[in-house]
Length: 621
Image (tube, rainbow, N blue to C red; front, side, top):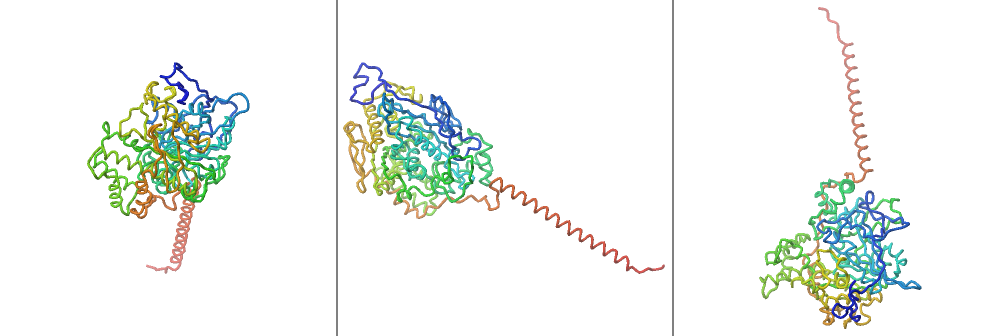
């Protein structure tokens, strides 16, 4: 750590001859919070860890299996294994005397539920200078974390149940690390924000979660919780076909994936789902019985099920911590991430009208708008066409980014805000309209999804060795705006974790205001000294996705159920044994009946022959 983040300290390279400012915190890495989810534990909820005598907590645990294109030394993920349920704790340095309890900030990484790792978020600066305990966690990803067949063979939600187990561990043990168990804040981007929203209403964790900071995501997003079980089944079948497993029944599929495929194969399997945009995610638990198993010590039967009702219903019914406080924000170019990842657009990333039309039609097809596909296409096309100049490629790219940003991030966030305001939950909103100047991004993606990561980790004040080499960070690259914005984010986030208000006092001249029903105030963050409170961000566009479009669709047709499963197909070993014995017994009975019939016929024939012989007349010749 090279600088004190607080600008008032004047510890900046050009203000002071001090070359290095030391911040101190205690770091505990690679703490297992559950037993390894391997062998019998694959495709099952996490198991309670049995504890340890002495642990060398000096190295990060392995990342959970994920596609190899996201891993490697240059990308910050050097180790990957199925044994990955570890967490890391960054605790402020305490002086002599009575130990002080600090607010706890639990970071849940994003990555569309298929990638990411806890070691990518460095909590040193937050803990050292802002007096909060920072915890980062791993959870199972992709098929290993979210494979669901919609029945008892693989209910799904293993990754989100990992988060539940981690939260329970934190609640039970964080006081030993100077954390306040009654002041736990969840924060994270994208899938992390969606997960935080689900954990805030889940029966197992709702009383643990005091505050949530949802960065560019919400529990009400379509990709956060899959409510159509046939959609989840369909994705699992696509994976089975890809890996060469039988899809005749859910038991055969799960058994093949559990015993016949390595974690590397399962983690590296990438494919577009037939329904929806992202293949994996938490699912709504349906009405089926999960068999009890002593192997899962510490879990009650109801704990196997994560959510049996949608989060919208639970919030309306008040099923959350009554002291809940909520903070959320989006950026002005969220979906620039997807454009940048599309290699077919490289190197100029230009988008024309034909490409835009194709993507709208793909969206209509993927979401099964079969009742009125053309009407849905025309509505989206009308909403996001720049009518003064429809063929301007620069504006088409901007509108394409806006369309995806509204669909995946802004509309769900807006819906969540309004729902919480109805329940009188204090809500604070920001819209990030500034960038990391040191990264020198092109104009069309200056404010992408999760740009806050560099600010929240205190990157301008950290040794570059803590960050992946692919990012090409240098110590002298940061500008004054980068440093000030980093301090602003760390100060407001830690303030919210401590007080439930990001700015009880102004931070660099900026003050948040609460949002209210009908008056959705948000902080428009340009730069630290050029930000302002505005009202009702993109209400028309958000209402288009949440209110208007459903009326055009009529009824969202669910995914069609698989057609290869029949009532008589075996799904479990006991059923296989039962049907095997039944067929054998039936065959034996048929064989006995046939033998009896043949014996009876043979006996009749013998008697008839004897009778004829006795009655035959004697003829002399």
